[in-house]
Image (cartoon, rainbow, N blue to C red; front, side, top):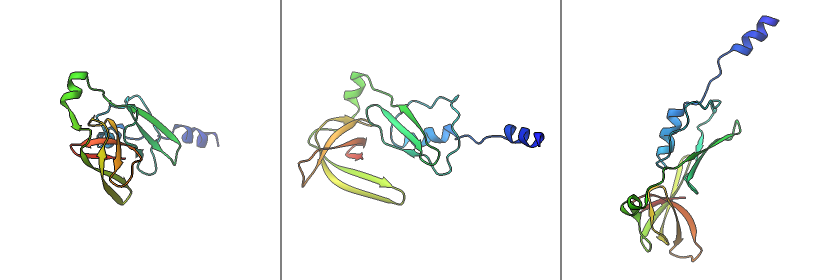
Length: 142
């Protein structure tokens, strides 16, 4: 009985591949690499990566209940102006994606933004502003 408990206690635990998480985060933003000393239990499904908000990307595993916040790299003032991809007043495509679907709509940018930065947008039919994240020239995600 004692040997069985010892074997269970020493059984290898599967950890999340942090390099894979870094690659998934890179689809949404230029973020800092995840600290490789972190040991996250392997998520039974793919971890959910949310687009950056307020300078961080949130990665979570709902099945196991873990969540990490990964800082987004910030640009210096000179670099920021050089890398603006959406200008105030531009007509842009905003996309929402989920498992097996993607919905897009034409919106108007209410702010300037560089890749990975938040900006306010409004639809062509509504005056209510929403928040999106600049993904590329003329493209943002919710």
